[in-house]
Image (cartoon, rainbow, N blue to C red; front, side, top):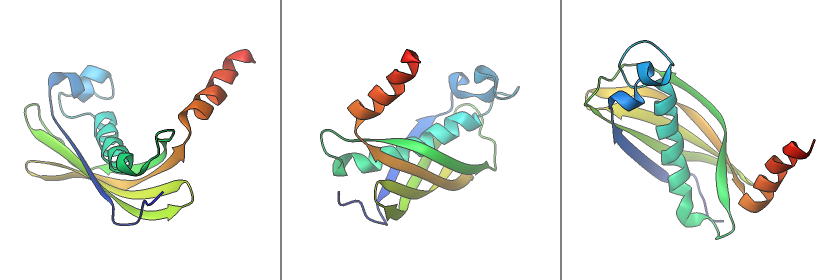
Length: 130
């Protein structure tokens, strides 16, 4: 693995009625939902790792600590940026930030672990055998 601090990622979308707080039940108003902002941040981070992972590797998010600081209405473009700040074995730490066309809408930190999907899924599936 050659993932190093400074590696950057980006993900973007447009706010529609389907990704609002009102639509998913995380609030009552038709603005970009916090869970969707978090997913956008995770996507930016996860996608930045893809070129550095082996064919038998993936990554999973394990921690996210963010503030959603500004509402975004339907129709605006939103995007998230990630930057790797630390690599500790299989644990990768990111600074993440989200923006709309008027400025920053959220920021925080995110951690991901590099995994072997087959082994990871087998462990999850084993919970059904209990």
